[in-house]
Length: 472
Image (tube, rainbow, N blue to C red):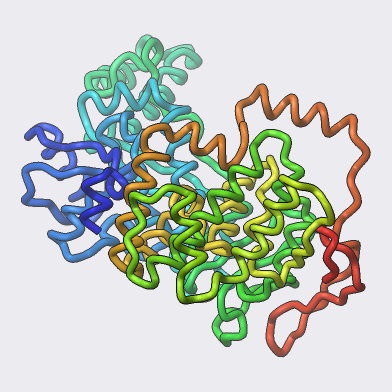
């Protein structure tokens, strides 16, 4: 993993804690949260204040998230909003914590200038001992304060000031005035410089969790479902009608289509489908060649293709399917038949613009693991797990590719892969779609029945045409 660390592909953009003042503030907050202190004189923290070095010192990578449910955090600076969130158990945690910082930035800037802000992402579930507890999580509330209880004191002072202004005898209440003066010495002028934190409640409807070997929870969709691995296991008793196995590609394709979450790459108007398909073909060829021990990091696309065609092993079906699609885009003719069962199918679609686009991209990244760029961007935990199993030739290629094609211009790489998600582009796309006739569902409309014995779902399907003309 050191190759990734050295290139900024792992533990990149962490906030450095290297001064005695910041270290002491961190220790004071850490002691309040966990009863422990670090002996390190410098370390690096993520968005939540988690430090890999401290995790190694404590031999506990969950020291700020002991039950994997209510994540604790320590803020030393609002600049932590630029940092990643490591060891995420819920895909929404980073966006919630980042929004909390951004929407309370003025107050947090004032508070962190003299103290650490610490707290917890609270929900109604304190321990996920059963799979059904995951569906009980709907709202996240952030509770925070400083080591000197500045926020609590400011809140108390605000109430006393309001009481002082309302009560007729407030001017003569020496006890009330004395208490206000005492609180003001630590909370400051709460009327001119409020330190209260406004936005602290966030909805959590659709999300991914690392619990139970990974599961995607879709509740806020037309047809709700849970997508997970090994749903036949007895302990995976989700209180929801539709439970899909990650290996059941047809049912997942049906779910994504019926909820209007994806579209074929060739229908996307805001990106170059041909370039994406070529890049994915490159990744498949790299996997094919490096499995034979061939070094590929310095090869051009033409050289990659020539070597891949001469290799001993036959190119996989993913390559043939995408190559046929590329040939059709370039030369026309009859559309290739890519049904959901085809290994290349999920490589040929993309997530539509909607609030859960990142979650769908995360799911697609697992369904097309050869696309190392989307895997790295959308599902870093899965990327690091896959990287650990690759041979050195593939590791070297992927590390250099990500540095050259992603790290140098992250915004462009995301835009080229996922499309333009700027407010202006989204509004233009929305206005355009309002004028269009709603497209027909490529898989048709049919119910999904649940098999109570296996807790999976089996679609009752008619033979309908897929987006490329194939039948499923």
